[in-house]
Amino acid sequence: MGIFSRARDIIEANLADILAGAEDPARTIDEMIVEMDETLAEVRAAAARVIADGKDVKRTLGRLRHGMQEWTARAELALTKGRDDLAHAALVEKRRLEEMAEALESELAALDARLRTHEDDIASLEARLREARARREAIRARLETAVTRRRVRELLRGDRLDQALLSFDRLERAADAAEGQADALALGTPQDLAARIAALDDPDPVRAELEALKARLRDSRRA
Image (tube, rainbow, N blue to C red):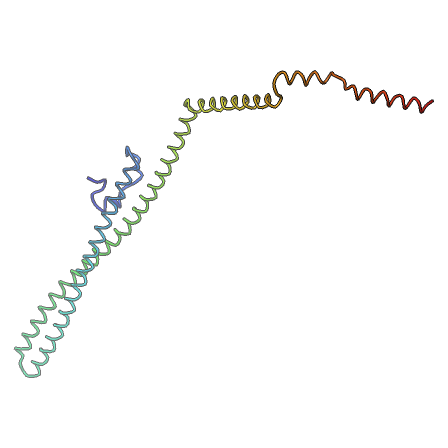
């Protein structure tokens, strides 16, 4: 059984109260929208039937009024011929058609009232349906936000973030080790490194001789 049972229930219902007491608001509002759509279709179909019935009544009324005019003309013709009896009988038939027309006019007025009621109900149902759909979108947006926030909080509170940070630390240490190995390869073997350092204290004999020669030349110019 649906949440609503008829159009008047939907129109008079407080959607906020219904959703506030629902265990699953998203599912409840989906059910409400389905029932609103079905009820709206039923009311529209009922309005269409009333319109069709009204057209039938109007056509019948047209025929009755035409018949009334014909019986009036016959009564007048009978009177001109001096046949009061026939004129009276024609007017009796006219009166019979008038009574039928009066009944149909009452029926037509009732149909018009029903149609106005259906039109009001359709307008109200469409408004409630728009409200329900807007609430559904709002609920979906809130649910999506809540799910996202829950996932973020679970990530921050759980061990997954700590494990990820530890993985980053291990990667950084591995990168440091690789860089150190590359620098060591650029310097060569330990023997090569020792020889290069020792060469720093080993004077160049050619350069020393050159400096001595420069000193003698400066002394000879002074003399």
